[in-house]
Length: 195
Image 1 (tube, rainbow, N blue to C red):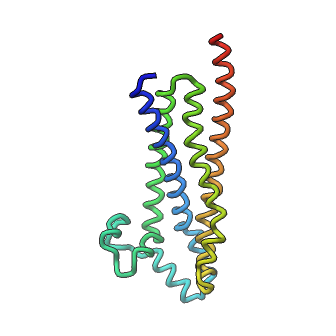
Image 2: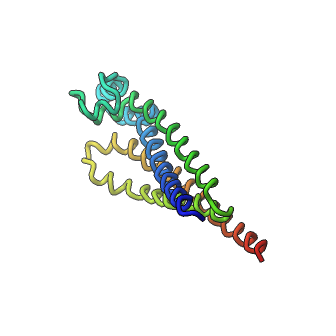
Image 3: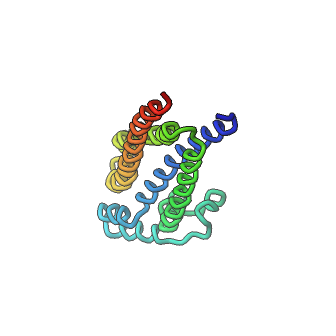
């Protein structure tokens, strides 16, 4: 294989792994800021605190999500990142990462030398991204750092975040294993055809 093709194959594999990791992270943030998670948080609070959370979630901010990093509103950046506005922004980002993943996957298939190489080049980024499923075990460690009075409303948000990590990264890991085994199977038959 020519050097530039190999370089592009490696770069597209790296882009595929980063795209998968980022896509799942954005899906998880979208789940944390979903209305159902906010409802779970509100149910754990007093009626007046519940109303404050609902007001903060629905509040519109003078800046976009990215713009608030430069000029944070007086309420704080954290409230912007956990608002309905941020939730809608996360949902839009998911589609952009899906496009990145599909383009990088097409590049891997196009640049691969044989079908077994194409399958291996797609499997490795999936396996690497799938290892992030181990983050689900960090939920209890993160929750241990939350003060006792904050655990009632932090637990639903952390459940949504780490639950999404576990589900999506596990699915990606299983897809990576399937591609890896398919690559070994195809490799066996490709070598038979060469003999």
